[in-house]
Length: 83
Image 1 (spheres, rainbow, N blue to C red):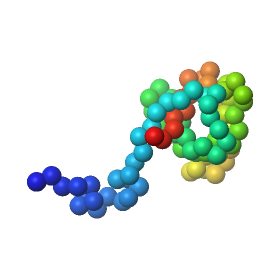
Image 2 (cartoon, one colour):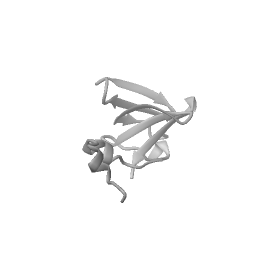
Image 3 (cartoon, rainbow, N blue to C red):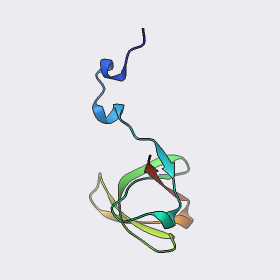
Image 4 (cartoon, helix red, strand yellow):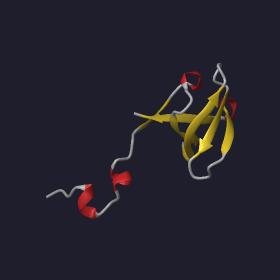
């Protein structure tokens, strides 16, 4: 018999993990929740505060730090949204 994740006592936020996908930075909108990765490694999770029209820069309010940081597309940073 296969056990469900709930039977292992995992918290709901772990069981309900969203799937993430990369998006073009020029499609990001204010208030959108995103995950930041670089080189395939998770960096931070946050909410888009502002983005330039050409998508070269985004300001993200980081959930765990509560501060606003700027990210540059040219630095190899990847922005992902949940599906």
